Length: 67
Image (cartoon, rainbow, N blue to C red; front, side, top):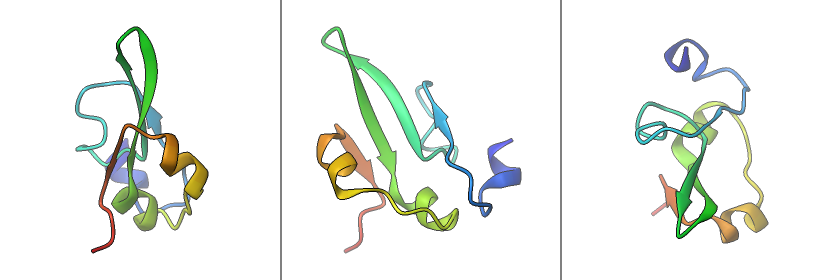
């Protein structure tokens, strides 16, 4: 499913271990009994989505950051 929509403007949200690696944009993970966010900026850019800096600040992990 992710491969078929990766260039379409769709925000994909999941909760599996390799969701970001598979091209998902936002992943929920449980750490220390709390729900945390992980964000894949490369996938967001490919889908022509912009992620708020406020959301990026609260994420535990952000991949695909610009150099």
